[in-house]
Image 1: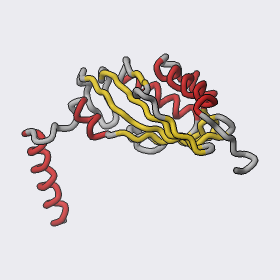
Image 2: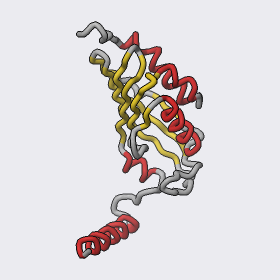
Image 3: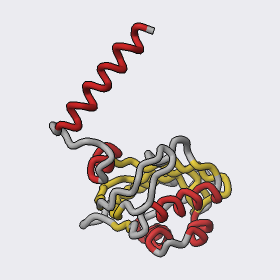
Image 4: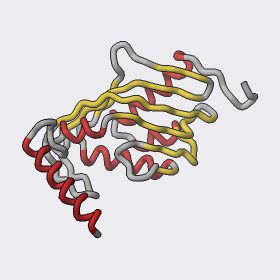
Length: 173
């Protein structure tokens, strides 16, 4: 282990996890800032490109709360936290109701609720999150919100037909 690498354990990370959840659940983007390095890189499946820096992460949070005003995070029972030096894997769940539009691409609010399980991978530097990557099933999320058709539904069959038609025309051009 290098001199700059800290050794973490569940007890030493508990305050960071609690502050992280409090920032999200308290809708307090300012409370997230001290948990992040100034040059944080934040990759989330909901983002087209990673957010870079504290201000972009805070904007992502505010956008998330606009779309899901009741957005809430929690831990599974039992909780899961894996630690390897400065690398952390933390299991979580999120839930919320889509009451705001997603723009881009322009999805209207559906009023539908979602519940998604996920895992974050964090790289810490100086006890703060320097690299963040979230993993969760965006297809399941989209189906729960009514943004993607349910498997086997008529809407799914129609989407398949549209994709095949688009594929045929793009090959001819």
